[in-house]
Length: 366
Image (cartoon, rainbow, N blue to C red; front, top):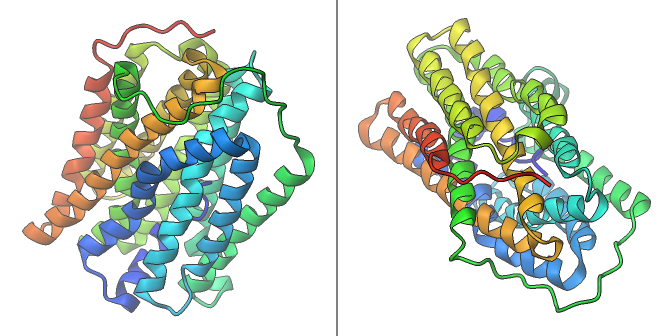
């Protein structure tokens, strides 16, 4: 679900050079899958209501695999952006399907099951972010185009595994499943804002760290920084295997996570070098923990038949804000010619994560 998206940041300098993209275009390219996650999440909810979560998940993964591989065809700016849009639609279908399947298959272990699949998701994105520069690009003679094909292969494998080893859950008797989010649900908006703040910090860092470090003459830190921010997610995410069921719904957890992400960004900027590389890992840790907590809450607070459209609403809000944050980072850089300006929206995202949890009602996990 993420491995093809996070394959982009390591090769951004090469794409930037070969296709002559502006910083605004770089922000749009890295933020485009996020925008599609926002725009198409409701369509994904509708598909789940029609054909079921498992079938929708398989269809979404197949679209990710095909279009993720095709992004390098040409190479062409038009092909790159068009296939990125279609790949984003595939991810948008998968995202609301995942919590729905968790609720169907593991109704008594929602927190643990959510942590399991999010750990898999994070391992996938960490592999593509961390291994592309030192191993995959040399293997492929430096071709960023073929690197996209390479990282689509595990997605094809996931399609095969899901289709072969899982079965559709029988539909329960009752009214037809709804698919349109309830936009008057204040709790849905709060979760969307919290997740949006975390996503702005995480996706923005992945998008702009490569060009930022080039601009400040520290290109040797690009690979380590991308590896650390993504590897930094793993300890926090593994911790959720034991803590998600207990901590989900506690607002103070989100407040502390926002402050941790803000501190990590501050140290990365103020202490350039290996200390900054280490600090950026706390951004990955805070944002991954936030994601598990939000996703675990969805099947806990909603009836099973409502999980997919509640998830779609949260994703629409959070990823819409993430795209705006990414694009604004690029615009600020272009407008000011100051690389540091790109990190302003990231800091705002961390603040939003903290403030979004203030006043949140306590939820008791089931």
